[in-house]
Image (cartoon, rainbow, N blue to C red):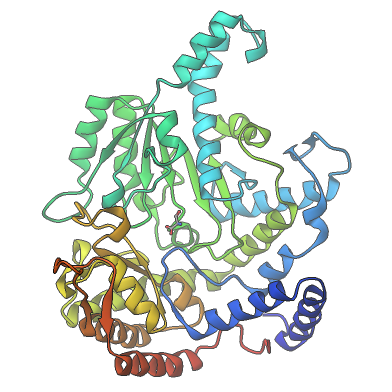
Length: 478
Ligand code: DSN
């Protein structure tokens, strides 16, 4: 770690410079640190980046336009952006053992869009151009271009259903991916709530997708990517894995062999800020076969790459290549298991009956609460979570019947297995003491709830003492 005291001075100077221009922004920035320090952050998709990663984002690398790729830019003077992008990609390839890495995407959605277009380019556009004996789409006649456009819109994608833990970008209607593709979902076994590979295979045989998407944002178990590749190969599909949630566990060598998507998938996407603990952003990893098509990501679907964020990705990947990161990744999983056990020992029902990754999906119906009520009551007590649908959720995606809890952030703060049991006790105290408030016509309410002040007080005080032993950015006096 850098000298936090010296960095404190730098941050004070920075915040007063910001405050001279817009005090409300300086104040909100200070307040965010105070909030993060004083709450139990259990949002499975969040983390705390290191101070070097955060500091790397605040530089003039932000000021340069660099559309294109390393060495092939649409603007002059990109030599330094070339350096940071190449370093980030080199670290990413080494960290994940990938043939090719594209570090420009600004988010997970952007990374998925790049991947979708690369796959469409490779399997739809390139063959069409070859068939017409032309090099680019501009060389096609108007009629042939119309035919190609229809072909783009006629492709199929098979992904995990939202309530089983899939992600919106895996072909669902509220996202552009649902408008780009004909989509079908595979779910989980109704009894075990575990991924049913035979059901995935039958859906793939029947639907014959161009793209089989594996990966999740709320499934508390590991996936066998070797099996998913077998299914993709059998039906001639491209296997795309969205590892946004668990890329830190892949980087940290907790998910290896069949659970490591890199050797099995054609294309892998991720965010860089979740379990991977980097800056907010995205990335695509691919076999060499797809490299040229992925490289067209900007300006195909992305705006100008963020040089400062690519630099921060390079720093974060360098951190993740250190042996300590493997210790961290193992601790994330141990802590999730301890949290799950602590909750179940106190009577909670968890989707799939536990976890073997970084997250736990708690079914709130046991407490007579919707996910929304549980999320809000926990927040009152200083425990930050997010509501999440459970399989076949009777309350839909807005109110839901679950809360998702993840351990990457608290593990970064140094929380241990025994701390996680304390956290489970606090969650259980809050949910057991919360009751759903009925609506005016006496029906069970989905949003409002009652929670006694003394319970809030007790949980907040206990959480504060737990948090004080695991300070966020120790030594940083802001
Ligand atoms: N927002 C991320 C999550 O919370 O899982 C995924 O988009």
